[in-house]
Every structure is written in C-alpha cells, then in structure tokens.
Amino acid sequence: MAGSQYQQLVFALLLVVLLLCCRRSAGYREQHKDRVAFLPGQPRSPPVSQFSGYITVNERNGRALFYWFFEAQASPAQKPLLLWLNGGPGCSSVGYGAASELGPLRVTRYGAGLEFNKFAWNREANLLFLESSVGVGFSYTNTSSDLTKLNDAFVAEDAYNFLVNWFKRFPQYKDRTFYISGESYAGHYVPQLAELVYDKNKDKTNMYINIKGFMVGNPLTDDYYDSKGLAEYAWSHSVVSDEIYERIKKVCNFKVSNWTDDCDKVMSIVFGQYHEIDIYNIYAPRCNLPQSAAAPSVDQVLATNNQDHFRRRIRMLSGYDACYSSYAEKYFNRADVQIAFHANLSGALPRKWQVCSDSILRSYNFSVLSILPIYTKLIKAGLKVWLYSGDADGRVPVIGSRYCVEALGLATKTQWQPWYLNKQVAGRFVEYQGMTMVTIRGAGHLVPLNKPDEGFALVDAFLLGKRLPTRR
Ligand SMILES: *[C@@H]1O[C@H](CO)[C@@H](O)[C@H](O)[C@H]1NC(C)=O
Ligand SMILES: *[C@@H]1O[C@H](CO)[C@@H](O)[C@H](O)[C@H]1NC(C)=O
Ligand SMILES: *[C@@H]1O[C@H](CO)[C@@H](O)[C@H](O)[C@H]1NC(C)=O
Ligand SMILES: *[C@@H]1O[C@H](CO)[C@@H](O)[C@H](O)[C@H]1NC(C)=O
Image (cartoon, rainbow, N blue to C red):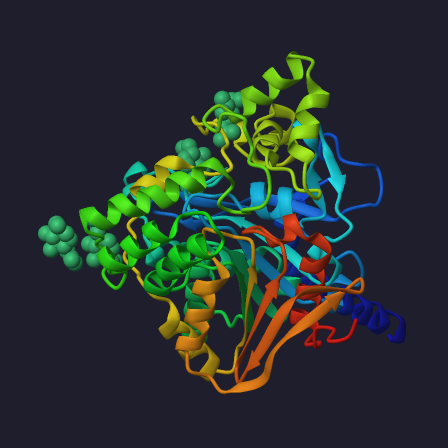
C-alpha cells in the first residue's frame, strides 16, 4: 500500500542519515572529550574555543604527544590551520608559544591565572600548539630508551604521525589549508616537517595534508652562517671587544661543527658576556630569578613582600617580562590545571612540567648542520616560505639569517625596505623570488612576546598574502 511504502521510504532515509552521521562521529566523539571547558584562572570573557589532549604517535613504544588547540576567534570554518612549534630542543610550545607568546590565553604574573591576548594569532587561523618531542612538557614515551635516540629525523617522524592522527580526531580540518610556523631550534623542525609532509603527500596511500607553506622566526638554519652571525653580532653590538673579535676570526673555523679548544675558549668569553645580559633580547633586563628553581623562587619573591621592587626591576624597558617562563612553570604544575587540561592523566608522569627540559637538550643528537637544501627544495615546490627575525636577538641574530637567505641565491623581487605599524618603522623586509625575509625592529628571540602588535601584523600578512605596509 502507498502508506506502508511511504513508511519504508522514511525508514530507509533515516537509516542512511544515521549511517552517515555515525561514520562521521568516531573522530568527533574523541574530539569532544578533548574540549576544554574552562581553565583555572581563565577570564570569563571573551569565550575561547579550545581543546587539549594526547595523540598517540607510536603504539609499539607507547609514545604520545600533547597538544593545545584553539579554534579561530571568528569563522573557524573559513580560516586556515596553523601549527606552531618551539625549539630548544626540549622547549614546550604550550609554555612558550601558547602561554607566553601568541596564544589567546597567556599566563599572568606569578602564574596566578590567564589573561586574554588581543594579538593572538588565532584571530586569523585555527591555532595548534604541539609539545614536541616526547619528553617535552606533558608529552611522553613509555619506552625510556626513546629519549636517548632523539634527533631531527625522529622528531619529524613523530610530528608527522601526530598530524595524521590529529586530523583523524578533527576531520573537519583535514582538507584545510595548512601552514607550519615556529622559532629558534624549530628553524630545523618546521622545514623538516614541511618536507616530510610534502614527500609523504606524493604517495597516494598516505593521508593528503594540504600544506601551503611555512614561516620561521629567529630560526637556527645553518651552523656556519648562524655561528659567524653570532660572533659578528656580539662585536657589532659592543658586547665584546675588537681584540676578542679578532681572535675569533683567527682561531674559529665555523665551517666544521667541531670547534677547536682555542675557539671554544674565545667563544666562552662571548657567552660569558651574554650571560650578564639576556642573550635573547640584548637590550632588555634579564630575569634574575635563579633559573634552576624558577617556580619556587616566584613563591619566594611573593613571600618576601617585595613585589613592587620585583615588578619595577622586571618592567624596565617596554612590556617585556623576563620572568615569563617561571610563571608558566608555576601555572602548568598545578593539579587543577592539569585536570582541566586533560594532561598527565592519573598523575603518571614522574617529572615536573618544565618550560624547557635540560635532559632532552643534553641527550639530543645534533646531526643536521644545514637546513638550506630543504629551503631550496620546498621553494622550488612552490610552498610559501617566510623567515622573520627580531633584530635584538644575540642567539640567532639577524646577521646570520641574512647570510643564510643570501646563500640561497634567489633573485630579488623587491629591495630591502622598511615596513610600518602605528606610524613607526616596525622593521624591514625584502622579497625574493620564492621567499620573504622580514625583520622586527627591537624585538628579541621571541618576537610575538616582545612585539605582539608587530608579530600579529606579520602573521596576518603571511596568511592572507598581503604586502606589509610600506607607508607610514
Ligand atoms: C603508556 O602506559 C600507560 C600505563 O600502562 C598506559 O595507560 C598508556 O596508554 C600508555 N601510552 C601509550 C601512548 O601507549
Ligand atoms: C673533532 O675533534 C676531535 C678531537 O679534536 C677529532 O678527533 C675529530 O676528528 C674531529 N672531527 C671532525 C669532524 O672534525
Ligand atoms: C603529574 O602528576 C603528579 C601527581 O600529581 C606530579 O607529581 C607530577 O609532577 C606531574 N607531572 C607533570 C609532568 O606535571
Ligand atoms: C645521531 O644521528 C645520526 C643521523 O641519524 C646517526 O647516524 C648517528 O648514529 C646518531 N648518533 C648517536 C650517538 O645516536
């Protein structure tokens, strides 16, 4: 009869809808478990759509990486996906990138809570922070011998597996335009991961990841040029004498990774001088809290009732706070924070959460000396490549990065010229055939921390393909 046929049709349609929705829901169900409702000390407004949790990257050895993800502040479905990596090796992208630099929620003074960052990069992108490698932050391995095997290839492989499995959990982002960015030693991680994604994409049996480019800040790129740049920068910024600089030129051959004893000796004088200031931001005050016991020492400062003195000292010069990393350590070691964050499940991680892990840094196998061949390959492949540099950084100084970029031998499209923000010169930039180099005037190693407004203008131009403003 017509009635029962109609019922059958409705029933069949319902079945189809149900099947479609349940096929979709495996990833979505997992993803909802990762949603972070509210973090301790988070401001009530504006609302922040955030997720965090673990992604298994190697089942056999039990390796899992921890991530913190923020959807774009408006129209996330229309915005690209941007992965951010910090360096070290051994430093946390949650502690630095997300909570101190470019994330929408930054840890406040003394680790008391969080504040909204109006220059957050998730104004223009869905923003993913990854604690890489295992042994960093909340990321872990159940096979401790993994920690002695870390090198660039190992880290890239795990990060790639992370991406594939993260996209399975967040299928709505799988075909999204994808970029990678990061700073410092991520000058290795970022291009290497981009290359791995690019290579894996060629094999149709792998998940296709829609990578379009990368951007790195004060990136370690080539040992020779970066070391030469470090020495020249120290001399040209009056950190060391003419005599020391002449000795460096005489006894150091930065072309070999193995420095001679004489070179070690004279370079240790350079680093000795940099120890007196903040090598990462040479005109800023350095954090005088004892580094090894950073978090407890914040307690001490609070207890001594000398807050004003403390604040004045660290506030000198701009809004830069040299003690930010100790605030992050205080915040992320709180049990209530870890629970809200889905981190350190059932308290299984024996160590403390650290913004940088010394033991990872010490055991890391530095086997790659230059990333420049990857630049050449990926520029040829048509990826968008930007390198930016805070020009007050003594550790990976702008001079070395200029040597690196010049060594690529790309044709110049537009000459070195200033760019502007708020009617001031914000830095300079030069466009090559295939890549762009940008400086940020007066910023140190952590550009989005030191110059948040300029940092946002930069990522905005990168993502939207806009020209940096060339007029006041
Ligand atoms: C690591 O071991 C713990 C305890 O056995 C287990 O709960 C966890 O799932 C393991 N992690 C991975 C990634 O396999
Ligand atoms: C590094 O230095 C050691 C000791 O001076 C030497 O034996 C070795 O050959 C050097 N290696 C390279 C690659 O220069
Ligand atoms: C994990 O939790 C335990 C128990 O609260 C704590 O002792 C440990 O420091 C935590 N690990 C990390 C990495 O925060
Ligand atoms: C360091 O990594 C390189 C390149 O993968 C490898 O050949 C070498 O054996 C490693 N060294 C150690 C000590 O693990």
